[in-house]
Image 1 (cartoon, helix red, strand yellow):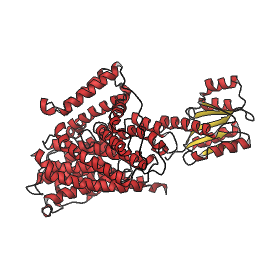
Image 2: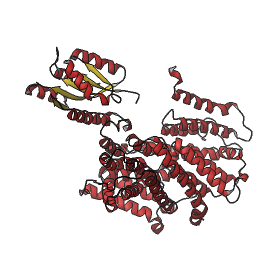
Image 3: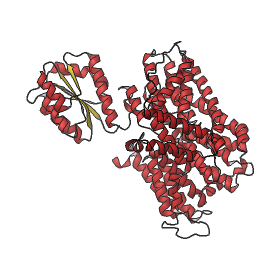
Length: 165
Length: 466
């Protein structure tokens, strides 16, 4: 694994951010965690990660942010070829119907987590989305067997027609 | 500092090795032999240190031979007293060697089987009679894995079987050694099962291809007759070793593989083609049609019916075919330039008894294969065996087939490390076991394997090949 796959969290409230980071700690050794407090900072972080040749596997994004909102950020990412495949989870307490529909239609939103979340639910969603991401993007799935859905990864390897050597 | 990565040093080593024979004159080796030695060195260094993928090295080998050693190449346009250059078509022709076509047949069958879940359904049905006691579950898993890996790649079989055992692992107590036994029984059975048929694993192809270049053709059933009894003994032995080392605590395991045989038109065609092909392969002695010829049946039928489409044909592991073809190609020039014979001449073989030859070749193969690709190990060693036979250096009693079998089969006995085989790497990646568990059990099985290969080579194989 020369290239790193990042997990990006965008959230403006400090306590919420701390809670998210704490709940996602166990992914850190496999997927380095990056955080941003608003959309502009997130854009900068994304640019830095991409320019170093790494990629973003998953973004967990709050809806209500100072300045540009979360849904707009996700739409931007969808339209950028470097981040269009990034799995996108909206974490929010107050997104109305319209914003949610917009996120699904325009940002290819993969999952929606309502606040407050349970740790299990969050982990489960992150595992599922990252598993799909590495199956789509990575050639060697073995490094992820211990942290992600190993059964699904094995199934993907089975379908790949791997030869002996 | 970045210039001195392991890969760049490996490449540099290969290039220096390649250059040396151009500047140093070696007595007793023809001019073409020097060039072949150059190619052999760069190939061996690249195959062993892997600065580039092993199949890419095979492509390089074919390229270098065509450019430098063929009649159409730049160095030997005319035959000399010592070297009659091969046509370049011989070097590239290895890609359509009958054994390669046989493998292609195996690949399309495996692809179709996976597409229609035939592999999983066979597993589900065959596992049923093994009940729920851990030791019989492990035996069942091993039997099914070995059976499938005889016809599919060991790696694909292991990946499939992981989807069967991972749900069980999730339900067992974390401190129950049965977890380790379960996780290890799959790759070990896959490695061993690959020995059973010519298409089981690429080292078999290396052996069969090299022998057919010497005019010795081994039929599908003949190989199975030679190899299957050994596979059965090794499976039972590995089962016993795993149970002894990792004694299960629980007395019941619930095995629950879901699924049903697909019954649509395409699936039924796949079952028929599968049955027909394997049926014809294992009845070769009755009808006399070679297995490589039969292999064209699934290739053509599965494409004609559209069961495998363009993308699925692209998705076959073509690199494995290149890997084997490059090895066979290297064997051709090592023979024809006299390089292999020269290497052989550096050792006084008269000191070796028949028994010692078997043990030495078996042991060297197992050691190499634990650290290198099995195919590469077999590829590097087989030409030496061939030359030992053709030069007569090893004396009267030397049997080329015997030593080739020892090399080919011993390579599949190497399973002490995660890097030894891709199935081992997959088992390791689950995090269920530590390397020491694999090394400990793999060492016992490897040592027993060497003993068995030796006994079979002394007492059983000679009955069939003479």
